[in-house]
Length: 326
Image (tube, one colour):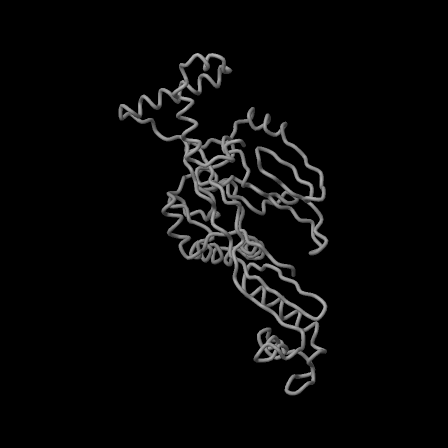
């Protein structure tokens, strides 16, 4: 969008310029919808000067915060690599795997055993030594860092309504496919949302990534700057933050599948206590945390957000993290 290339204060100035020129001779040459928009701006300027401001219909959100990761640098005589990991534990597990694969360099020397110990921290300490220089020309660094997102503000609508059938069909028909090239893998784009699907040879997986930073704010961006998403794999909903048909967490689903009726009641009770589910105040039916209305047939009561939040207080909100190689 053209607006992305200007600062919020510049956009505000441009809007006021348009309103000032709304009734000038040059405005008559504008297309009808541009002329109507300029006249609306002029009316807002007059109303603001008279102390009668209209309710805001959009808000400006600042840049999203960066994501903290742990950077693990490992160097040997032949290579020097640095990779990001979601947690310090994941980085140390990868370092321990590297140490065990290279144990022949130190095994049996001095107080070092022939085989690496099962404990990751002990294996790392024995391999690199107390000063980190037990093996010539080898070492590691582990430090926190921040993956910075694109630093730009976003305008979001305050009266969000997801597109109706006609509008959604039109947006779907305008979807674009971008073939893979030297700049990146193939992806499709609909309403500004980019969906990448490709073979990740490094990790040996088919990877699917969804990027919403460029989502169309007029159609699919909620007031908090997020996009309602539902991810389906082989007819199974694996992610849903749309407040409809929200799935159970995978482990909870497995426990419920394996439980008898008595065990099932206990699992549901614990899930509600842990904040993974909420209990309907009318019929006590247990519902997935992300849903707003009771899923029991004939009930459908909408729970107050504060009631759900209080039951889920012990559970941190799920976040998408960046994983290093396994």
